Length: 379
Image 1 (cartoon, rainbow, N blue to C red):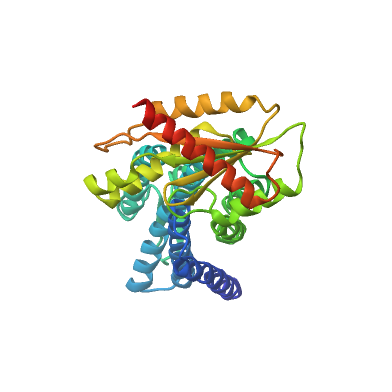
Image 2 (cartoon, rainbow, N blue to C red):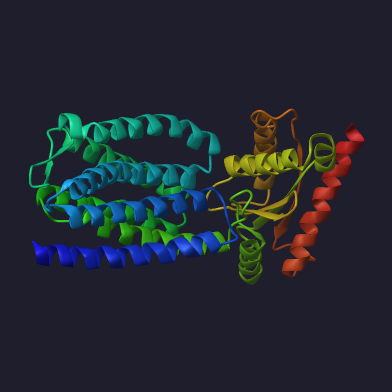
């Protein structure tokens, strides 16, 4: 028992150090978006879970009132934190795939109810022994309802995995493996821990999964605009350079420039916070309209670019019509006192007179401002 306890303390110390390094880096990062915030919260929960498990192992089987209290609090906390981690991962996956803030907020309600139920089960365990019991020697034992929180945690992980697999076509190839690996590692560790009492492998699996997601997220954040979650200027420039370096006349590339109309008026009338809402709504329109294999990026301010491959040059008209329909359908941000409209122009590559990335940007820019002038003239 002493050897096992010593071994687990060393393991928990190593896991805690890994989580602290990731957490410190995330807190120092300037690139903060919804995924960053969810992942940071997961790391905080993971650190608390490791501390709870370590405290439970240290106090388990030791005599006295204080060790008994430590074992009780640690095991109750670990139950809640395990489910919280799984639900947070589900939220991370839902938002990663859909970038839909409203879906995330709606999902938070049932998740909160489930978590509250687990917290109630854990908190009442000293009274009814349903979740777990602590015997006279201060040794932890599973209760008859122990599997409830296990099934909830595994259920959330399984659902997240199925959701990823069903939407794999929308996920960049380099990001798919971490999204699949994270739930599989704690699932394997948890199943082993559930089958073999006294083994503690769930936390190790979770930390390894978090490490994979962390590496993936760092790569993602470097190329992501913090406000909208779209690609940023750095990633857009890299895509544009690849386009110009690899012209395909049979299947030309379309570069669309999109601009929010009258953003200054929105800022002057309702304030810059509402201006940010307008920018995020334009991003939501573009995200809804285009596919994951298209590059949708925020260039600067209220200017956006979309880079996509066409089967034929004339297909650009159908793309513009789809964008116009989506923009009209999603013109009013939720709860906002205004509606937005957008202007869009495009350039095709290869085309005469376009030889560099700068030429391509400028051609799309000219086309967008011509579209804006035509719209104003019609009014």
